[in-house]
Amino acid sequence: MKQLIYPLFCSLLALQLTACGGSDDLDVPPKAVLTPDQVTTVSNIDALVIATYSYLGNDHYTAPNFLWPTGNLRAGDAHKGGNGPSDIFAYHALSMFEPIVPEMESFPPDLIDLNDKKWSRNYTGISRANEVLRVIANADSQVRDTLQQKVAEARFVRALFYFDLKIHHKWIPWIDETLSQEQILAASNRDLTDQQLWDKIAEDFRFAMNNLPDVQKDVGRASALSAKALLAKTLLYQAYEQDDQHNVIAINTDKLNEVIRLVTEVEQSNVYNLHDDYAKNFLVDYENGVESVFAIQRSLNDGSPDGRGSWASALNAPQSGGFGCCGFHVPTENFVNAFKTGADGLPLFDTGNNAIYNKDTDAVDPRLDHTVAMEGKPFKYDANLIHGGDSWSRAPAIYGNYTGMKDLEHPDCDCRGENGPFPIFSLNTVLVRFSDVLLWKAEALIELDRMNEAVPVINRLRQRAAASTARLNNASIYRIGQYSAFNSKDEARQALRWERRLELGLEGHRFFDLVRWGIAKESLDQYFLIEKGRKPYLQSAHFTKNKHEYLPIPNLQINLSGGLYVQNPGY
Image 1 (cartoon, helix red, strand yellow):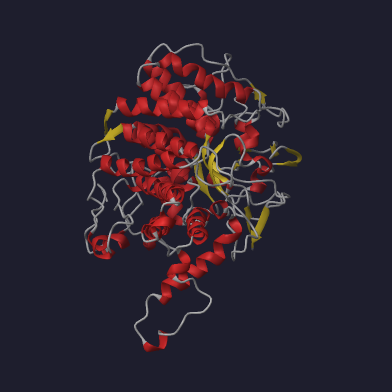
Image 2: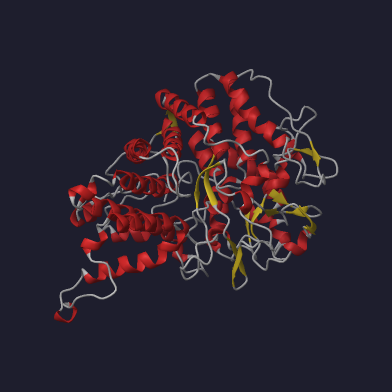
């Protein structure tokens, strides 16, 4: 599937250019391009769909679809890293919150508005999906009747791009294939309410769920089950209803009940399961395995100029250890301390962050050593590749020397490519893991006061974690226990929210969880209270409630809209 993407895109671009004539010089039969009649064949429409998928993997560390800058840096799970605050200052701004402005191009020395670049790339992906839908709508009726699955795939991918925009900016313009150019130009990001936008995204995933097979022959395509899972995620986010200042004011129980039903149906399909070893989720040899519900299919040497490898993580490998560059995405002490466990094997909710983790004395959840590499421990399970501490970091005095591992592979992996000093990998970016899906169900159960039904769901993940030590070298003290029951809703919430942090740590979800739950302010304040003493660069960091839950609408987009787009509160 990946081999078709680049040549097809060039042909489609040529088709668009030939449609822009108006000069006698251009009034000649085009060569080596697709005509409209050719595009509307079944095979070429499928190629258009593939080009839409491909844009998910056409990201970059300046506009990543692996959400480590916006999901981890803003959550207190990771420091920016690199060579100090000025090294991609926009990422520093995300960690600090207060410097975030609608026009990030003003940040020296980057001269790139990362906020606008991500926005623009998402809408480019949406445009590709919309073009598929327009072509199908204009196709011959006999062809059109055979293409419901292609419509469903295009709407699935479109919903992914819109979901990303929604969790970053909240209010966004909804542009679909039915709008004329004039209507697009007249569209505002406030034409639909917060809830109506969620409804639109849910409609796309629901259509995909109802018009796709449970299992696809081609790896990487959306299926009815992956759409069902993404619909459940959308409804879970939508269930936490917000006012215009981003405060959670109600929790919709009907939507929570549908989340439980949808996840239960995904479970009962027996298509997905937990890997027997947690490690397998982050090794290229096991990608597209039983736990991968939907993933960006990364590739190298695929016919495109630079491949669609893990450019989103191109800065995140350590300075040494055979990598080369660049030491970004450094786990925080706060995050590492969250893995500490007590005598009962349960998290130290109240005391774990009082002191920095000591591998010789502190017991931890084994998932720590699958997630974070640190001095004296192996990198990616290789006893011959021991983390070198400060020598592996570019600015250890500022950020520390931990290394996040989930988005990286071994430096000797056949899946590795390079662009200058930047290592990239063909390791897939998993957007939805089955463990994540199970935790949505546990969360919904707890919010519906069915706390004890959530206990076995959470314990299932903890049991898998306890059994995931075979690849580890016992350089740590591992102790992980099970929950017997929850005595209150607050206790259940704390356990669930902690479990999400441990299970999905550094995978780009944490900040968006905090906003969904309505606890971003209190969580970040608690983080800064201690972390500022450990990392002086954070001294001026401050999270402003009713503002920093979302990024601003890019200033360039407001200008291009002629002022139709409305800026988010506080900016």
